[in-house]
Amino acid sequence: MNIVQRMNAPTPRFFKKLRNIGLALAGISTAIASSPVVLPALLVTIAGYAAVAGGVIGAVSQLATDTEHPKNGGGDG
Image (cartoon, rainbow, N blue to C red; front, side, top):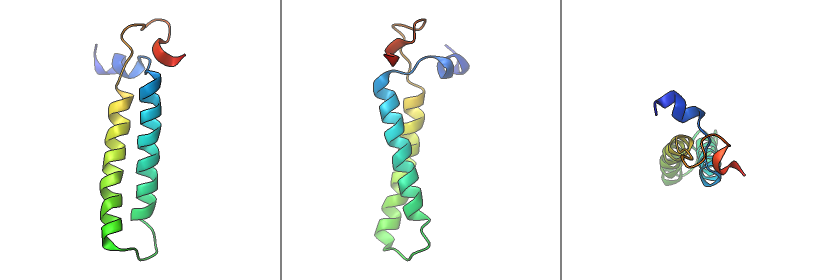
């Protein structure tokens, strides 16, 4: 399975939820890190790490595929 086929394959329900959580984490932490208000350095540092973690979670979850049922939509319900 090449990368294009993997991206077009159905994503299992669990990984869809995990992807959405990762994207939300990345979005919230990016908003905190780029806030115009002066925040403690520790909070900004944690937000930076959370943004990276959220991006990685989202990317890895997007590449997960349901190989048991590739023709009928897999785990989409």
